[in-house]
Image 1 (cartoon, rainbow, N blue to C red):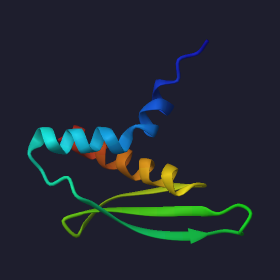
Image 2 (cartoon, rainbow, N blue to C red):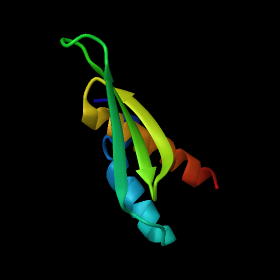
Image 3 (cartoon, one colour):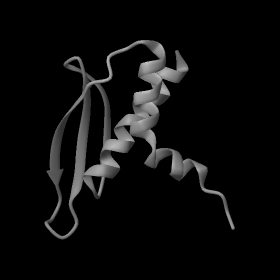
Length: 82
């Protein structure tokens, strides 16, 4: 059985981001701006992550949840690079 830790990490990105922000003593309140495109039977969601009214990440997915996790994973990459 193959271990899919990268996919697992994306699914847990919201929790990981919350924990990373807490560890750094940064605000942990998220807000979202959503946009839906594509046909009704196959939507694409764009979720923009905001912290303190500053856009920190953008994610896309066929479900809102997937797009939120992608946005959080994007911002986690930025935080971990600093």
